[in-house]
Image (cartoon, rainbow, N blue to C red; front, side, top):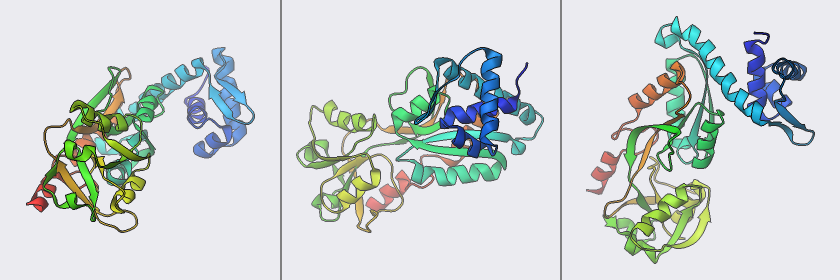
Length: 314
């Protein structure tokens, strides 16, 4: 083998950041060293790995994307040599974790911090995406594992469920329905809906109405969870969510109220996802085990538990 693991690491940094300069900062090495490593790999493997655009940085070629997946797997295996000889608490290496953007502010701070505390030799890199972005990130090997919902999980993705989160309606204090023990989708259909407009998430929420042959009155859309919550708190309409933030207030300090949806509706299942075709590293397995330890129906980091919510409603 006429290339080094270090050169592969530099290539991975460039492939994931799309920039020599950004890869240099990430790898804590000079830009010429990154460029030299890429040039050496291209020469050794007799293939072009990047398309270089002056204004847009680097774009991986099809061969480059394939090598990126294989290189990351090889680095994981190399890290596994250390891990195999170490006790579980001495695991080391880099773990790239993606999280659904709506879950990340609640779930990831405690989940990531406690994992790094349990495994101090691990560097956890976190990114946030919508569901489509997470699934694509797994397929491109940009992330190793995703914390997300089970929405539109295809056969190439392996999903490990943790907890079910049924949908609920969210109201502001001025809406009389905020005191209701439950509300039906038929009651909501004619009211103004503030839709969380994220890929796959919006199809899930609109699909709840479609299943009952109803059409909601979507009055406003936003891809930003806190914009939706603040608009609801100010009386613009209601919204549907699955996640249950512990803080029942919007960013402007106004109160928000969760109300159960009457009837049976498909929940969003929170769990972890990995690419099925890749061998699961000990780091990924350890992270998924950590998730199982911390997340349950009665306790979800950053969220109000379903049981606690029912007690408050009684």
